[in-house]
Length: 238
Image (tube, rainbow, N blue to C red):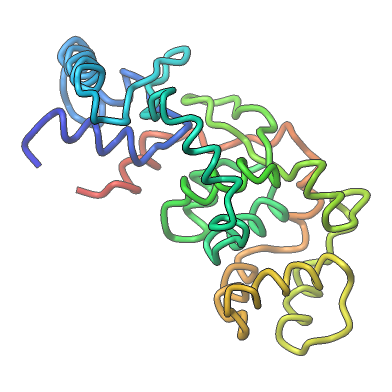
């Protein structure tokens, strides 16, 4: 891709709601910050001028975020509350399970575990109020930390995060269909509601966890990834 504008758009899309700083963009694109800033302003003007374009660029602190125009808010809210979004997709269920067992966790850490981009799933879970922001990483980029919400706890009948079944128990129940608790019953019903019966993909996901992850769940001071530039470069490739 030769266009600087296209490269900036692709980076803004990949980093999602966490955003990216001018310095990080300049570093990745190997361009002067002034040139990158001018390109961002050009894109924002282009989006604003085009009434058929739903995008705009937010500047929050020192982070630039690709978002949708406020005129789209009612439509997006309607979709989130519609029957079309009643069932969680397999991707959303995988993302929810990662957040439940690894919280607080950043979107990039979720992406690393799943091996694919998870921005859409995270937004869906936020809209369903199953997860919420738990603060930000004390590191360059100030990535958002996600954890499960009070609604999630109530829905699955949990008093504390420690009431989650251990990963080993969850895996055993998935494989052998052992008697399970309320959390697993509802989780499995969500899976089966999507036509997912073998749970193979979930086994692969949970195999990347360990039981210590549950103990980490209550520690909101967890250090996040400090090398955000490396993470972004890894995510977008060439």
